[in-house]
Structures are given as structure tokens and as C-alpha cells.
Image (cartoon, rainbow, N blue to C red; front, side, top):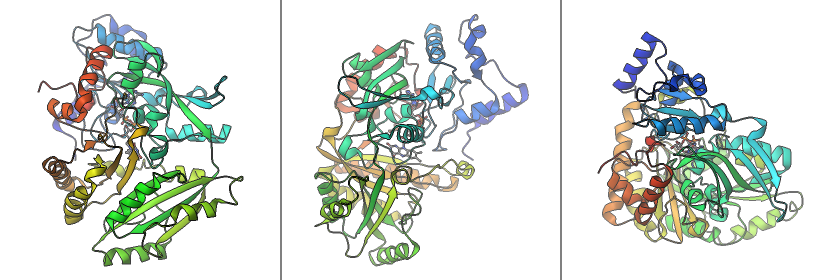
Length: 515
Ligand code: FAD
């Protein structure tokens, strides 16, 4: 139902004529016979996958899909585009979990990074010979789930910073940020990278780190795929905990909910803190961890929800432990939660193996997902404006409509865990919150949710709440400039330096506009 006419015509053309020439028409005539031609695919199924993502809102077919057999194929492809009088766009597709076509390459080539993932070489664990810490060298197309399995099961080690959902690629989350309840403590995933190999928009394969080619390193982290293709990232590891004490507390008062979250991210103790809103459309158990509450507890919370005008707040807190700390863990949890202001009796605890916690969302790749759309809105909100944001957005817009059918996340980060040299942007305050409105809707409801998202953004603009979009999506150059603010000039200069012919990641819609 979401396929636009252009896409349908392309599919039709292909189904009548079979495979068309996989190369864009602008390329020089000798190129079609180069070795990577055999790894270009333009059959219906390849094009359909490359023009679909989790959002199911944008469908822009490329001319072909490259399934690379090596990093050299990526270098060759980018160089070929550079050598054309009119370069063709190239976008890398990690796991296609963007929601607005960010990994698409209309009229160009989509690189399917899964073709390079999953091998023995995809996750390699080493120890720094001088400093003694451990790290993993992982391929850009590896799923975080596989990184977790390989580091934990084979080495008893694990990365420290995660996303809630692990079926996302390393290159995909490092191009954005990679946030979750551990970010307050360790920073987002982009703050936990030691080194990367990147194929730039000029087709050069460059190793970069804090010390080496640092401008490229910081450009790529949170860089929305604009500067290069991440083919390897070196990720910080720590000893993997074996178990997690997993606690959820219910609040009926927004200011107590935010005060306690800020307290929890300021003290030592918790490994993970995430707040969320509960409404009758966004109930206590949802796809983020469908079996946390027993059904009597779920009913108890639903009754409280009804008595509280249909809105409650939940703080999810986790402390990891292992055999060495098993005898003190309960006492430690008691100390962390003492003096918190949740509703009496509304604290719920579980004790699970670490895998059950980190992989709590499970794999969401279900066929029925094809029928629905995900017009998600993710924002960073400055702490100083959280009260106004609550009244204007959470209570008034979201509460009044009360239609949001997915999880509604709202939890804080410490900005000192984000390196300002990275491309990622945050509000200019020591603490900021993230709002995740993870809507799922039927095609006929789409307009409604898009209007609600626009109303939220408009309200913030008019109220002077300087939000930043996470996983951003804008339609004009002016909006992108505003998004990057004081970082725009650097962002643009880095683009000119690393991808001067504007080849990479056009699906992000950043440098495609004149105004
Ligand atoms: P894609 O959608 O394939 O690509 C995203 C962008 O990155 C594109 O511009 C693409 O060209 C570029 N890109 C991809 N790979 C590379 C590479 N190797 N080198 C350079 N550029 C590259 N985010 C969070 O921070 N925390 C969460 O908890 C979280 N949970 C999510 C849960 C679900 C169900 C979904 C759908 C998304 C979630 N996200 C979360 C958002 C997610 O991190 C981003 O959408 C991310 O980009 C998805 O990764 P991907 O591998 O699917 O990337």
C-alpha cells in the first residue's frame, strides 16, 4: 500500500524485461565488464529488499545491489562512481532498520553489507599488549547480536554499551549513536570505539582512531554514512557479567519519575537505567520485553493506570552480577533504590541470565511486519525544559491523542560521555533526555501519526525547547543546518574532504538540497 508509482513501474519494467543493465547509464563503457559486475544484482527481489526498510514509509529503488565479496569490491565501486562524469549514488545497507529510507540509493547502487558478515573473521577478540585491556575487531556489517554471542560465549567478554535491540549492524548504529540504558554510564556505542577502517567517498581505505586520521574517525561516528563506509570497528570489551537483577518501578508523578532517574544516573551502582511511559495503548508488557510482568502484576498496573488518568511512568533499572558478587547483590539493589519515590508496592523484580536481559527484545523480523508502518520519532530534549516538554508534549499532545501504540521511552543521558568532536549532535546541556515514540500503524493511520509528530516538533519550536532529532530526518538544507547548529560548518567541510562528489548515503537527504 505504501509503494509509490515510480517503484511499481520499475518493478513492472524488470518483470517484463528480466534483469536490466545493472550499472547506471552514466558510467564509461569499459566498466560493465569489470569483475565486480558479477556481484551486482538487479533482480526483482534484490531491488525490492533494497527499497524497503523497517519504517515502510519510503520506497526508492536503486539500479542495482552490490553483494561484495571483499572490501576491495567496496573500494572499486566507490572509485568507479568517482570516475564517472556524473557519479552515481552509493548507500550502504546494514540491516535496513532505518525508518525513512536512509539506507536507500535512488538511481544508484545499494551495498548489502550482510554479504560480508557472519564469517569467522567477522568478530576477532584481542588483548592490548601494553595496557592489557580487551577489544573486538568487528566487521561493519556484523549484527550486534552476533558480536554479543561471539564475545560472550567464546571469551567471557562483552561490549559495554548496547542498543535495546541487537539485530542492528555495527556500521548502522555507529553511523547514528547507538543508545540504550547503559549510555548514561559508558556513553553511546560511538563513545566506545577505539579504531575503524573506513572506505571514504573518494574510494580510499583508511584506518583511523583518536590519534590516527582523527578527523575521519570523529566525522564517521554519528556521521549518518556521509563520509565513508565502516568496514571494521574496534570495540571496547569488558568482562561479561553472568546475571542481571532486573527491576521495574512504577510512578504516578512525572517530577518524581525524572528526579529519580537523574539521581540514578548520578550515583554509582546501576548498570542500566531506562524510563518509559505507560498508557492504555502502550501497556506494561510490550515487544521490548514481552514477558517481564506476570499476568496478575500486569492487571495490577493496568488498574493503577485507570486510576491515574491513563498515564503512568516506569523506571527500569538493572544491576549486573556474577558468582563473586552474588551474595551482596540484593543488598546493593536495596541501597540503590532506597529513598526512591515510586508508588508503594509497585516494584517488580526479576533475576535473569545476562543474555536474557541484553537480548530481551528478540528478533522482530516477522513477515506480518511488512503490512505495517513505523513512523517513529526520536528526540533529545534538554533537561532544563523537561517540565514544559511534559506539559506540552507528553500530557497534551501524546496524552490527548492517546493513540501511540508502541513503547514510549523517556530517559536521561550524561553529556560528558559524548565526545563533542564526533558528528553526532546533542542538546548543549549536561543532562538531556531521549524520547522514543516507537509507533506501529496501519497504512490508513499514517497521516494521523505524521501529523502528531509534526505537532510535537512545532510545539517545541514555538516553546523554545531546543530539541535535536535522533535518527534525524529533514526535508530541507535549512533544517539540516539548524539540526547541526555550530557543527554544520565542520560537517560540511568534512563532506567536501572525504566525499567531495557527494556519492555516499543520499538516502539521508542531507546534501541533496539547494535550499
Ligand atoms: P541501516 O538502516 O541499514 O543504515 C542506517 C544508516 O547508516 C544509513 O544511512 C546507511 O547508509 C548507514 N550505514 C549502514 N551501515 C554502514 C556502514 N557500515 N558504514 C557507513 N554507513 C553505514 N537505535 C538506538 O540507538 N538504540 C536502540 O535501542 C534502537 N533500537 C531499535 C529497535 C528497532 C526495532 C529498530 C528498527 C531500530 C532501532 N534503533 C535503535 C535505530 C537503529 O540504531 C538505526 O536505525 C540504525 O541505523 C539501524 O541499523 P541498521 O544496521 O539497520 O542500519
